[in-house]
Length: 368
Ligand SMILES: NC(=O)c1ccc[n+]([C@@H]2O[C@H](COP(=O)([O-])OP(=O)(O)OC[C@H]3O[C@@H](n4cnc5c(N)ncnc54)[C@H](OP(=O)(O)O)[C@@H]3O)[C@@H](O)[C@H]2O)c1
Image (cartoon, rainbow, N blue to C red; front, side):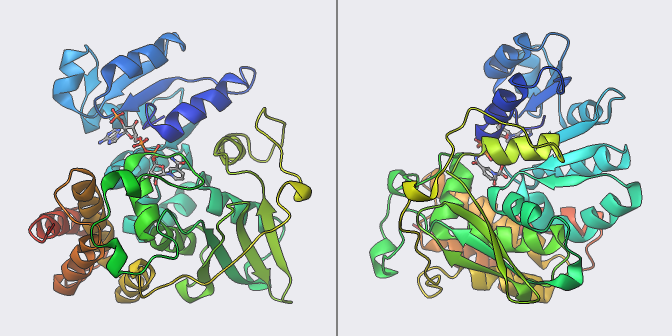
C-alpha cells in the first residue's frame, strides 16, 4: 500500500483486517509519518515499511526515497498494489508495479489525469487489472459489468457540490481553509477536500473516467447530487440509466477493488430507499466553479496539457491549504498555467518535465 497513513490507507487497512483469509499486507509506505507507519507495521508482522521522505526515513530507521517505494511494489510477494498517495507522486511506482505484472487498486486519480495516455496502454500490454477505488468510478465499474463499449452512451458522475454549493463567485472571495474543509458528506484528506470545494475533484474524475473506461470526454458529464447516495450512473444506448447507490462510505468501493469479482458483506451501514425519500439532482454552476471547463480544455488540448492542469491544481490546492493562495485564485492559477503551456507528446520524460514546469509556474502565480 502506498499512502497507508492517509484517509484511504487507514480505511483500506480496516477492510483488509476483515479478510485475513484472503488478504495479507506485505508492504506499507507513506511520505513522512514514521510513527503512524511503525504502528501500522506492528499490526502486520513481516510487512516491509518505506517512507518517500529520505530524512524522515533515516530518522525512523526505514527504507527511504522513490527507489524504496518502487522496490516495495515490485517485490515478488506482491500481487496487488493499493495506490492511495495524495497526488501524481504515485505515478512512478504505479508504472513500475504494472511493468512487474502487479494488479492495481487505484485511489490516486491524479495518476490517470496526468498520465492516462501512458498508464492505460501499459495496463493492456502487461495484462494487469486496474480497478478504481474512487466511489464514482467504482459505481460506474459496477454498472458497466456485462456491457460492451458500444452499448454505453454516457457516463454521469455525481458531485455532492461541496461546502460552497449555491454560493455566488463573489461570496467565495474570502473563504477560509476551515470553511473549505467542512465537506458536507465525505471525510477525506486535505487536498481532495479542497478539490471538492473548487469542483476540481469532479474535473479530475471526469478525466480519470475518460481513461479508465476508454470513453471520449464529451460522453462523460457530471451533475450535482447533494445527498451523495447515488455514486454515479451509466446511460446505455437504449436510454436506460443504471445507478449504484449506498451511504457515502469508502470502505465499500475499497473492498470491491480488493476482492473483485467477489461480493461479500461488511460492517458498514446499509442504505434503504426509505432512509432517503428525497434524492435531488441539479446542474453544475460552471460560472461560479470553472473547474470542469478547465478540465475539458486540458483534454481537448491533449498531450501533456492534462499533466500541466493537474500539477498546477496540486500546487494551488496545497498553496491554499498552506495559506499562500486564495480560494478563487486556485482556478485562475490553473487556467493561467495552462495558457502558457505548449503541449508535448505524453512520453514519461515530457510528463515529468511538464509536471515540474507547471508547479513552478503555478507557484509564481499565487495571489491572496
Ligand atoms: N479520502 C477519500 O475519501 C478519497 C476518495 C476518493 C479518492 N481519493 C484519492 O485518494 C488519494 C489519497 O487521498 P486521501 O484522502 O487518503 O489523502 P490523505 O489523507 O492526505 O493521505 C495521503 C497519503 O499519501 C501519503 N503520501 C503523500 N505524499 C507521498 C509521497 N510523496 N510518497 C509516499 N506517500 C505519500 C501520505 O503520507 P504521510 O501521512 O506520511 O504524509 C498519506 O499516507 C488522493 O488521490 C485522493 O484524490 C480519496
